[in-house]
Every structure is written in structure tokens, then in C-alpha cells.
Length: 259
Image (cartoon, rainbow, N blue to C red; front, side, top):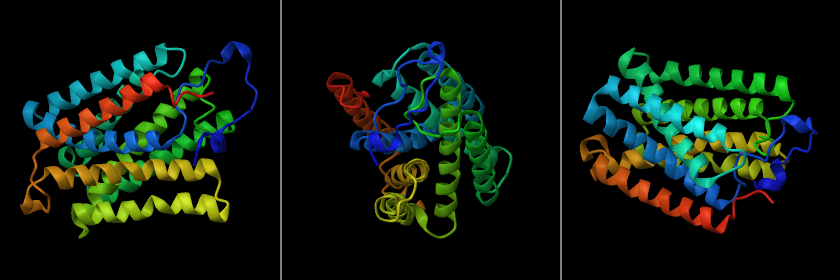
């Protein structure tokens, strides 16, 4: 799936429009997306360990609000601004899922369909209002608000789904294999069976979350939990450096700027 499959040419009132606020869908988009999911998973766990759950959630919430405020303030897609907001959504989305499980004692088997329902509600409201779910029609404030609500819901859903599979017998490495296979399904269905491009995109977008998070957990957690035992700090740092390098490349090359 690339940008041309996701364009929406529905006319908008001139006073309400602005330059599209999201990047083109390229291979770099998917690489950075997976990296942010893994980094958000381990960073969330690291902050909770260092600061405690409540201060970590408060700090994550403030960082998310600040990053989204900057994203809404700019009038066009800016790589650093957009991907910083995605990272903060990843961190806070992980915390949201963990609060339900650890703080409120809600099992992943319950929170996963709960977040799925929340995502479906966002999509339903978005479509009822705008008649499109295309990410390349984000040219009004209202569409941008729907977009980020959907993104936050996908991260929370993906976190819960990944933790669910890891705790019901797949383990972290097994979950990586499961979601790596699952993410191929919408791409193949779009290519060979005519699955709607927007549906295929959002399905793959949701799956990137448990894929990246499971991979990062497998690398960071101890062998007693089925991981490599590299530690939260090294994995968080390594994935952060990788994100910075890719985003810096895109900021300079502008290969993901809509033409």
C-alpha cells in the first residue's frame, strides 16, 4: 500500500483546508512505525520502573498533550513534529493499556475487545462526519482530531493484544512470528483480492503495534520470561537512536512529503 491508494479527492471548503498533515506511506513510514511501537513499549516500562506508575503516567500524559499541541499548531507535515507525537502516543498508549491491567486488574482478554470497540467507535464517528477514513485527507482540524484519536486507540489496542498473546502461550518470540505473519494478510488481500486500500492500511497499522512491542519486549526482558535479557535501557536507547536516524533522513530528503 502506497500513498496513491489512500488519496481522497473529496472537495473541502477552502477556508477549512490546509496541507495534508501526515507523511506519504512509504517503506520508511512502516519501518519508523514499528520502531516507535517497540520504543514506546520499553520506554513506558522503564519510566514506570524509575518514577513509579502514577508519576510515569502523569509525565507521559503531559508529554503527549505537548507533542499533539505542536502537531496541531503547524500547518503542514513536519517530520520531527509528526514522529515525536507518534512516539508520545506510543508511550502513553502503552501506559493506558497497562493501567487497565495492572492498576485496575482488568485482564487483557477484556481490555483487548474494549479497545477494539473504542477504535471502531472512533472510525464510525469519523466516517459519519467526513465520509472517508483516508489518512491522506487530513486537511482540516476535525479530520486531524479524528486521526489522532484513531492512532491513540490503535496503540492501546495493539498493546493489549500483544500482551494477551504473550501471556496465553505464544510468548514474546511466538507473538513476533504471529504478528509478522498477520501483517502480511491485509497487504496480500489488498493486492490479490481487492481489499479496500483504506481498510488494508488501518488493519496493518493496528498490527504494527503488537509486532513492534512484542519484538522489543523479547529483546529487553529476561530469559526467565522468554526474552534475550538485553535490558530496558539498552533496547530503549537503541530503538530511539534508530528512530532519530530515520526521521533525520526523511527531514533532509523529504521523501515522505506529499507531492
